[in-house]
Image 1 (cartoon, rainbow, N blue to C red):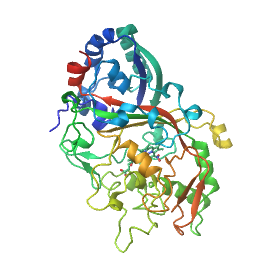
Image 2: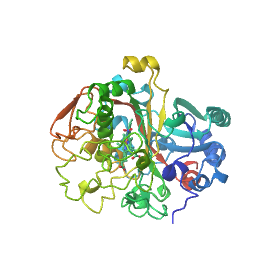
Image 3: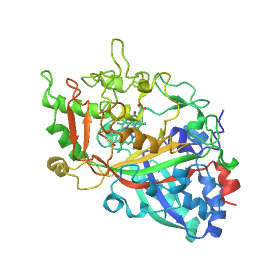
Image 4: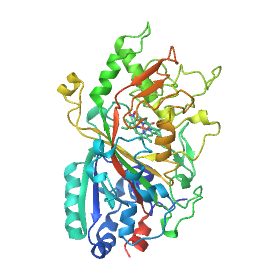
Length: 441
Ligand code: N7H
């Protein structure tokens, strides 16, 4: 089994809290910082074991990760064996399809100036702020805060749903040796797909890198009123559907799930909330059906749907590929849509997804999914078009096919990106023992 005392808690199961603060910093004085990293930060780092049992969960959980420039500042010189991590996310911007940084990137992300991120998670912002104040006073001038993003679950019945309204956090891979009973249809991956130097990770790493993982952070702005106005203006027309049902169907086909989480592949024409809420059924599909041509039939799920682009299941053959999987731990940020934003169809206050993903290889994980699947108009098949949710072509319009179930050849031209990257950084989330024996010495 895995050493769950040594793996940071967010990686395999998520922090399980309603509020989360992402605190980005630079190391101002490395000689001052190192003893504080081991003496003040490490005792507060929440392990996987602590999160697994409610009785050992801290009031405020803390995880930490370092960028390449942060490791360099700590005088850690060995290569971790991932060139995309080493170069940083700013250097990867064009591959990801982002706009030029001056348009959309948060200024603090545009470059390699961020050395690390601390993830604070708790039930309330007050508890987080207390933990931050206490840690800041312990760390003194050894670090400098560069930027922060406050995030949290949406209110009431929308908890667990991202800002477009869709239930999130349904499909993460099961990890061999960790997940006791994978759900039907859940991908099963070797631990080395997520954790460095575990079975399934073939790259040579320094010994202290074991059980660390690469953390992708992206601040992804979502244009929610604009998305809703687009659905309202373009309902799928079918004699049996009202305009509202046609708009809901278009949104569901763009995502590949209904707002309840019910997969379009299993419930193609109407939402099925009982299916969406049932973890034994809501992942149990492959896009393949009896009497159905997998490579041409889009009457169930479009080839372009977000969840099909990012996990093609049977499209890549059976058994499913075991490499291109990520562990997602994102959380919404920003306020609910106001009445005036809803009526004008225009965003006035930023909201979106604080996207977090863990993997042992950026070139197989997030970077691959975004560049070679989501942004690639010829994946899953020639002419599919870019992912209508997250596909990004540096601001150019996206032409998507398959959204109309009655005529899959019809194309839809998306002139607005409903998800806009505001940048981020690539980090390495080390094991607790690596913090003690390597990073802080
Ligand atoms: Fe996606 N959305 O609300 O439309 N995503 N995603 N994602 N995503 C998923 O199955 C969303 C983003 C993946 O295993 C669901 O847990 C939004 C990026 C993967 O079947 C919903 C944003 C990347 C899966 C959304 C966003 C991915 C997945 C269904 C940005 C990687 C699992 C819930 C603002 C490059 C696929 C679920 C599977 C699921 C949405 C970003 C990847 C509702 C709004 C950047 C691998």
